Amino acid sequence: MGITLGEQNFRAKIASREDFVRKVEGAVRRGEKTWLHPIEQFAGRSVLGISHENLERTRQTLGSFSAEEQEILRRFHTLPFRIVIRMSPGRLYWTLKDGALFSTGLLRALGQETTPFTPDLENDMFGAFDYVFASYAKDLGQRMYGDVVLLLKPEEVLPRSWATRVSGWRVAEQQGGRGLGEQKKAFIREIFHPDHFREAIDLQTVIRLRSMARSEREKLLARPTVTWPHLFYELDFGRLELKIKSHVLCREIERVLLPPAARGDIPAMLRARGIPFTYYSPGFPVVEASK
Image (cartoon, rainbow, N blue to C red; front, side, top):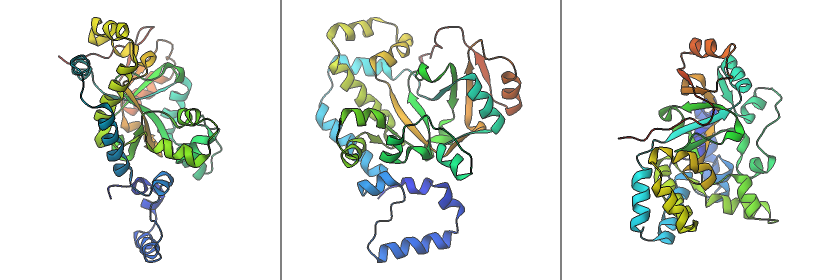
């Protein structure tokens, strides 16, 4: 059956284990499903099972890779993966002051009013308010979210994460006027488990390459690999949208990249938290390829 997203539920961890076991046992005896997360309950299987199905279906659809695709993937693999959250300096200030970045659902559970950036339709689709959003990517995230770049520690956040190739909002747009049930079915086809992230991005990259004109692929191959991440946003590949359960603690931040304007109290606050940081020049930070 695999690990379910329900096991990441912070309320279930805090509650009495014996009481939780009794409730699950009672549900099983009554023939009820025991999934605790809405998207798994809708699908009737774990995110790991969903992810296996999505990988296999995509492999079958794509078939063998061409020599050109294999060469692009070989060079693609020299670039490191990052877990990235982008934000404004003001949001970083409050994250450091609070000691964590909290999901909308956790803030509301703690009695704090908040206006989420995440649209309601994504919460209806998969319980989006229970998550902090990030990118699992070869680039450094989408600039529209801010000039501060948080790089997270994979070993800390991946065990309570899952991801999709596209956002819930994009799925809803693709589904047009179809109802929520159809939107959920389409969204489920985009889900991947952390064990499968790297292959999922490889497959996503090949899908995108096959939709590009030959001249675009040749242009990509002609560029030094180290400059590729600058293109990934406009080319729309090289990333998954990561959903991290409930929060990101300051101790789970590996490094922060700051724009020159992020001065004031922020450097001292980062030092106090023990978080390494560097400034980057105007433009976009470079992600170096491995040797």
